[in-house]
Image (cartoon, rainbow, N blue to C red; front, side, top):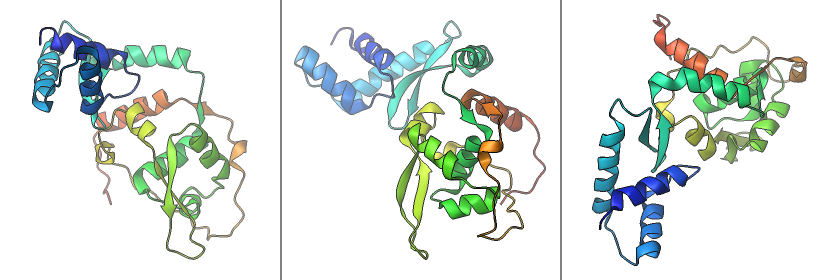
Length: 217
């Protein structure tokens, strides 16, 4: 079909989240009354990826979470990051970001385990992360009381441009405090500092650029 790649390009550009091969094929079939094979669509996407790989373009087509999405190339992340910081309205507290990091690297994880690592109550942070759909309830632990298990959501994967959780940067050691479960924990709302998700990405990039001589788990 003529202009197949351009039609696919328009779909990827329009989609707010990574668009899957199935969604692309369904849209093309409904639009033109033709059935396209997976190979035809992949070939067209490959052509687009080759074109956007050229230095003339600041964006590229990336495969994320079983779908495709336009993303800014790494060399322009600093500029885009400044813009996002200026326009970001929904922000996460440092306490929520610490909790999100624990969930990302330790999932599936219970609230008790998070509080043992942080040494403070995580109720409020978990609530905010659930509201922002960055984490989800994955089930229940087999331990006493069968507490809820938390993990990162598909929205978390999409936002940070991850195909799977193994793409996360390698974490530094989680150091558990000496407190035992059940000891009084300070209320985390006392932590006033707020930081955006873009700030976390910048911090993680700085960590990756620095030599890491610490032993990892």
